[in-house]
Length: 305
Image 1 (tube, rainbow, N blue to C red):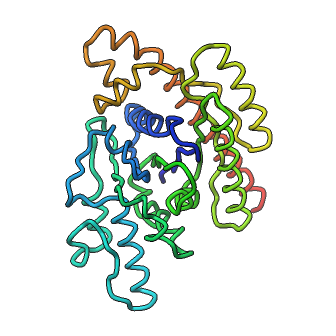
Image 2: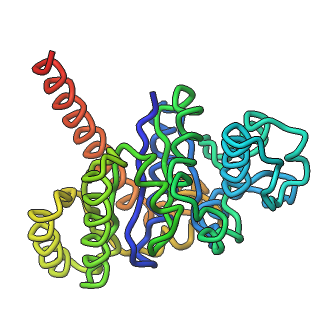
Image 3: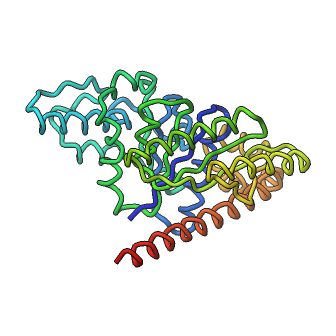
């Protein structure tokens, strides 16, 4: 059963996609089967993964529209109504669409790419029950993967709420500014409201301080995230990711930092080593925190029995 982790913050530009990409590749290197899902219309996760945008490869939008159509037909007997980018929907099942959508990256993880038309998600997915569409997709794939990483778009949208419902854990990415901390607060508020309505089970796994520039800034902003974590249940990870050119250069070459380091360039190796070490520490913390939550849930279940 896959552990489903959404990478979010309602402020843009904090590095959600870079973290999604690096963690997906890192968990594969640790022997896991990983699926990335790009839900951001900017499609950077798909692009960093060096994946084709060929017209006949279904996107996450296509899959969700197909699932929506199938559920609508089942409930009301309606004809196919979605306006998908994928030409052959009428002749395919949702399983066929999913199989065709999943692409394998050179770094070993699978990915379902985003569509530019996700900018119109409110029109496509405006019905109340649409909030469960991504969960339906993930439930059909969960036994095939160890981790499913969802790269979330900034700001509230139907895809963000679908991610809350479909995920087990949320990692918030924050930079050294008040705006990104406010994004963490908004994320916590969204999750709290959904859990109050028994709509979502997602747990705030933690906040990651990303792209800090110097040690003094790290200490100051880490303390600010600790103060925020008291009220949002999103205590920061001990690991923080420094600002560095290695991640930018790697992304520009459509590869993770580890592959960039292996490129053979001495300067690339020097730039990449410390960043890779920090991501390894972050992955250790993620696994430890998840294990702690799972143990606590198992203990609670035993007490109830």
